[in-house]
Length: 113
Image (cartoon, rainbow, N blue to C red; front, side, top):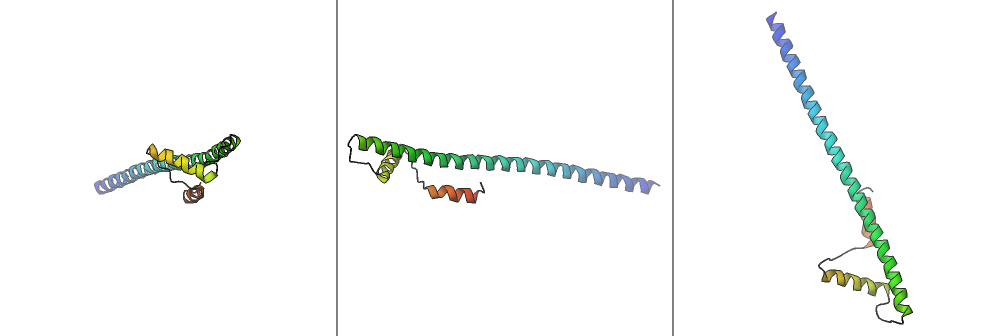
């Protein structure tokens, strides 16, 4: 009879240990999935902000071209010239911006946004 009790105790302890390990593992997996979801959301927001920045930059350039041509200015009135002027000013402030609109499409495909 004592063998049956010992076997039963080992069986119960084995089940308890297995259950505890499963619960801990599942809890860690839930936390990891939540962290991954949060990171994906942040990446999606960053990509959307980058896209919005690009459109805002295009609007500023178009407005600046219109203002400069209205005043009769003939220097730096093309899109590329103004873009280079902006980028030069950023580099002077140690904010180098190497950006192309095609990167947005690449990032969206890469990060599945």
